Length: 282
Ligand SMILES: [Zn+2]
Image (cartoon, rainbow, N blue to C red; front, top):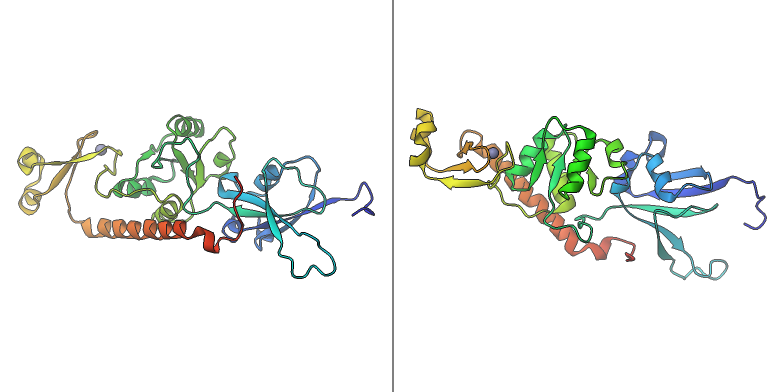
């Protein structure tokens, strides 16, 4: 390194975790990115410029090899955590890790996790509410409104808009993986492992559902429904009525899949240190 001319390019190497590679430009999807660094930008900035929102990054690490050189073949390399504000230097080789699953909320954020969904995720919003996860959603919010509301209510903003996740004012955000709502539901549940309370929230408005005696609502039911069903719940906020009707089997399958997803996430959380690789500083 000492014989490097002072104006030689500052080459750095970033290795992205498999879970992050789909976010990279096509030529880099192998995960190994070699760049000429400008000597000023932070590591976080370099990663964002490659298309990877920092909401998706768990930590940056650097391999530190004690006593490299002849005779050090048996020495185990160690790993050091590097902050996102670090300005890379020539020759750096850094690993970019994905967030851990399940991902804990930052210290000071009241749990369990609550969500705000961007306007394109209406079908996911209904599914999250079906399984009882507190989910705010409107189909007419602009980006500024979403950002302000997520911050004010300490909700995790879920979106597939990477530009929104790059807004530095946003406190809690996550990129939703999956093209369809069932895949997206599994992604969110395995990522945050929220407690589930199926059938307790109104899929339309996120209000609480409470049981209501049939006699009290019979006048609002069509004759066929009145004949066939006996158990009803009512939304405290919007007054909609629910009963286990024609779509029940499909909804029950979604609930069962959700329980499986959260169960697998909790299992991962319990054994995260055995297969994860790097240790976690701070
Ligand atoms: Zn409602």
